[in-house]
Length: 498
Ligand SMILES: Cc1ncc(COP(=O)(O)O)c(C=O)c1O
Image (cartoon, rainbow, N blue to C red; front, side):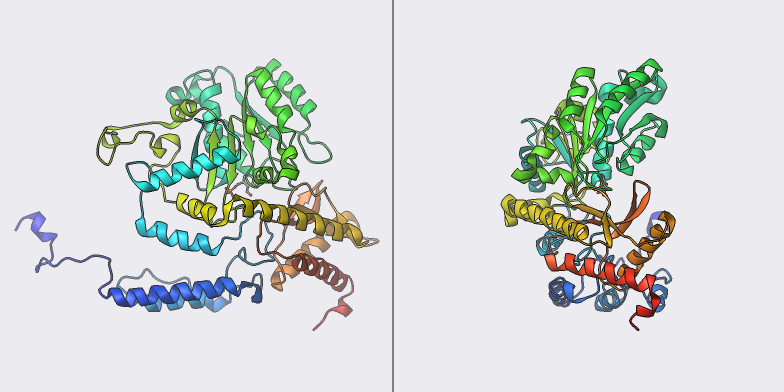
């Protein structure tokens, strides 16, 4: 008997992963869809968040399954142990970090995308055209010139990494792809405000430029970059032997939603031959609301723009996007075609311009479908209205906070982020920080709402980052009322309702 023969079962039987009984799987699928529609429809009736009971935690820590199980039993466990304990972000009162809500159409699109299961690296397939179409729409929305390139990615972090990698490739002045940073006669540096998102730092660390390569510029009282301080830092750094390559502008900082003077940053980049990258993870979308477009002036002058569709376009996670003004520079940064990826002039490997030549990933999922279906179903006008609604709700919350003597607004409401705290006579700053942290935890633990916490001007604050299409003004009222009640209850435990 040869070694080859020993790999085969004696009866040469074959198997695959398709169901033996398609009708049973179809029925299960219908049940899942019904359950999920009900789950979304009734989300407001459930707590915004709840602890995971210990027995559930224990059940989700089990040995590797060795043998097959009935698919409906697996689904039952999902319904019992997973579905009731979400992070909470599809709930109308979830405003933590910056996490989008998702939509029923997004859910259905994911089903369709997984069914086709295309690899979006490239190739001749209609899904490729769908991503191209989505990128073309993004280019049009953000007023990038015709011929610009783009890529759908996992999210803002990856979009920043891709944009900054192109910046380094183009502005380093030596062949980074060949030499790495060994070719660098001077330390390469990137500039942005202290309020930049941590993903920019992560990107520079991954790119080998280190945190030393990230030069943080102080901000103005409204938390936007101090443009004069940036100018001075650039001058000083050059004199000290550094090589500035890029400025990162914030179109909505993660902490407070502050928007940098993007036009001024674009001017500096133009005058000093620097790459202009804009991180507009969520804030870029404010540009589609005409009353707010002026705030984003200069964004369309960026060499690269990073933004998400899973935040303020409410699409299911993961989907972000990077646009790059110069297609050739983008492609030059990443393109690599070994023999086994040779592109042909005919057949399935034809088409040119594979997406794998524009980013880090070779195999890529069909995230484009949820964008294509959502944009076609809802239309950009609906998104415009919803984004405006979110900003108006944020302003409303800010007004409620300011109207109440026991609450303090901790930064201007620039876009959709409201940071505030409860204040109490006679407590020092440290005690106030503690008090607000405790208020936040109780609001979360009681399932009332899920804001998150952060520090603004070195003070602990409750933060509402609002990219939730399900929120109503009454949800904001409930938050304010709960903060006041819980604050009072902590200061005077006798009040606590049992
Ligand atoms: C301004 C900003 N940039 C980048 C990111 C990272 O985006 P993602 O979480 O989609 O990777 C975020 C996330 O909140 C953000 O607010």
